[in-house]
Amino acid sequence: MSAVSPARALAFATIRATFEEDAFTERFFREEAEGRGVSGRERAQAQRLSYGAVQRRATSDAAIESLAERSVRLLDPPVLAALRLGLYELLFADATPDHAAVDQAVELAKAAGAGHAAGLVNAVLRRAIREREKLRSELLEDDSTPERAAAAHSAPLWLVQMWWEELGSDATRSLLAACNEPAELAVTVHTRRAGRDAVIATLREAGVEARTPEAPWPLSPPETLVLCGRAGAAVSPLVANGQLTPQSRGSAAVVEVLDPQPGEHVLDLCAGPGIKTGQIAARMGDRGEVISVELAPERATEVAEQARRFGLRSVSVIEADATGAALAGGFDRVLVDAPCSDLGTLASRPDARWRKSPRMLERLAGVQQGLLAAAAAAVRPGGVLVYATCTISRRENENQVAALLEASAAGEVPPLTLEDLGARAPGLAAVGDSRCLQMRPDRDRTSGFFIGRFKRDDEERE
Image 1 (cartoon, rainbow, N blue to C red):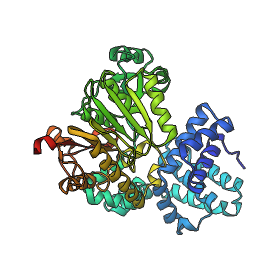
Image 2: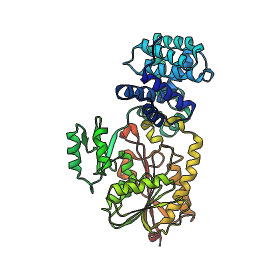
Image 3: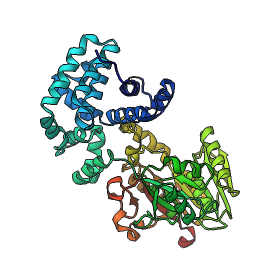
Image 4: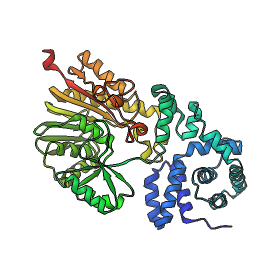
């Protein structure tokens, strides 16, 4: 009997907690690693294994059902977790010796009280070694149908089917593949705290390359930098002193489209944790007023703390439900960065894809509709309303834009016109409405933000 390594024991515990207790993978891993005293290379290995096994669940489950010739629903939870970990190592972690992957998975099952199934774990994993090339060919290289693509790229079938219908098969395959790649690391420089060139020089001294992205508008705002290499140690102190904020280019593009100007009266609905609020106020030179509305108390506190860290005095935070807050109105610009299904950021969290559902999309769509109605009432005649999500879903994006325009035409909300952002950036135009923008992780190397910009046109109609 071989002793189970601390890294694999931690990875096994994280996989089980994620799928058996509905724990958030990253949070559980962090707390469990600290509690077990796992650090350094062991911790790094445990993170790679646990995050990878969670992310690749659908692929491993398809392999298990083929090799074990039974449904994964019939397997005891510790057996299934051991197989998911072992198959991830055999199919995706090339540095792991085959015998170690098998031996450790068997011992983990035994230690978890599933010794009766140790033979099954051993047999399935050894068969996976013998049939590895066949498995890779059948599971990883064939994504010709939604069902096969769901297994090959490890995604929920409903999501693959939705994208297949809305984006087409080729775009769906490309997008799914990008969801399994590391997300680009980008930051926003707060120029009230530090100059962009000075920040680049500081990062370079720490061995981190920082570059200005070469991308179409609005994915290349002047305060955005893309970082290469291991940047955590170098970036953390700059974040703490308010010089930098980790922010994807897709997220930063939202404020680029909003285009706030010094002296304006701006409303940021659903503002937590305050990244865009800070970006808006900085763009305005801290001249004017930014009202940030956030329902969750802890996130409202984050908004206020962000503003203090950036040295911004123009920000005021209101803790309230944006759909029912008694706002005075008359805002020059209103941003609705709406709660959404986050389907444009699946690469950022290993378990995110397993937490989404069609029912979630429907529930969120109702919230988004209420927010847009409140925002339309708050913007002044001639003012600007920007609607943004970090998702790729017509139900939450193009359909919401269409519904708001219908409500405007019916007189249910103030008169609005949808501006043609796609004419300015054709390569980013949304499939369902080319006047809007839809960023994609595969094509644009950033989070999948959707952006629509409206103008309240009472004055024009008069």
